[in-house]
Image 1 (cartoon, rainbow, N blue to C red):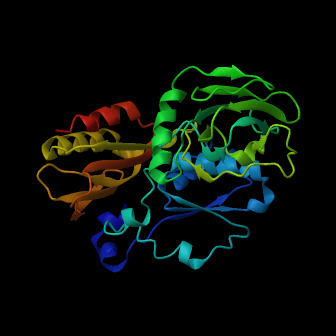
Image 2: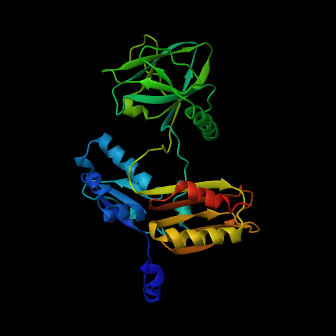
Image 3: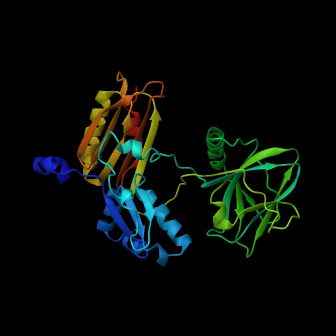
Length: 345
């Protein structure tokens, strides 16, 4: 906050960004025990996940997921001996409202109940879906029929899958047939590779929306009876998503995204009350807002009780919408979401 409140320092220095060096071998023991470690993760614009050579890949992936849950704005860079290029940690312009959102356009990517999609073109026949032992004894899966391959089709399939994932899952045991279009819970607790079977009546392109990535379970799709070594059917398109994860950390990030215009008076009242009552617990905030009657989007950022915002580029033909992210301690997502939505016209 010193860089914002002390006029002399502000006149002589510019805060380019916050880089936090994370010890991959010991961070799990520190998070939750040390407020300082937790807050350093939460405030960062770049997280350098160091000593990756001392941690196995699966554990490293879980650490990175946890860090991203705590701070969705930060870029995560893996390193050994803190060997990273200077360009990744300098000239971040993280506190420059004209550039901050442009440099990190995906920080408000929505979370999904699945992590990976593979699109496969299949002819009529019987297929085997096999999985090796992985991190969990079960995995959720939805198979989408008539799946397209471009970004719009993948997102449309993702939204359709979200509704399927909200339904109770059917347990599927190794050797069972896999129905299309249903929320499935593949039981994977038996040793060795597990096989499930898919019957295709007509030529079709399907999308597999899985709770985990294909690599985590060495997921393979083959024509029934074909050898796994050289009979594996490659995915036509693969896509990873920002997946929902649950942790016990007090510090986390909340993303709010809505369409529509915001009433400036209601917004000021809501933000004023929020910062007065919870400003100490809000470490960082950033986003853009569609203010009613304004032709340009309003971009903002803040640290604790300090708030800075200004008009940005014109909306033009771009759909008017609002994207906000808050990083802090013990934030009430439901209350904050309802509070902001009450500002909409």
